[in-house]
Image 1 (tube, helix red, strand yellow):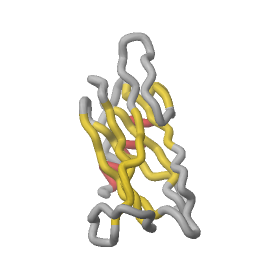
Image 2 (cartoon, helix red, strand yellow):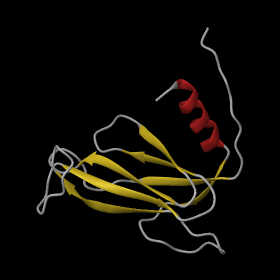
Image 3 (cartoon, rainbow, N blue to C red):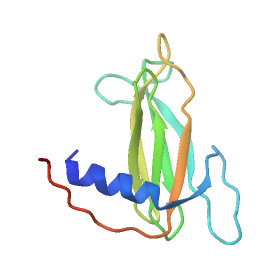
Image 4 (cartoon, helix red, strand yellow):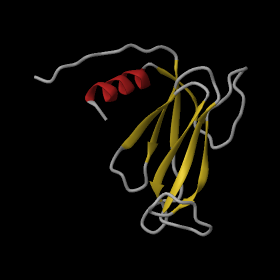
Length: 123
């Protein structure tokens, strides 16, 4: 990820409104709530498997007309990861699960109310 993209995501997340962090949909007024769901277990090549595996996909869905920034703690990672979801879109994220890794993913979703682009140079 480029420094500019990371800074833009951080800026967007600080200006965001928290819209929920649930694994199921619920309506807030008339705005559809973004959701996260378990997609399925996959092998090292990314193919679906019928039993458990050490990798799984999680689907982040944004049914709203606003951009959403998702912060989640990837099992075993030292810090949160950020992804952005464009309006009316779904992103698939692959994570390690089982064994030494947690099988639950905690997600914070923030709906972007406003944003601005920043350009910061390193000294």
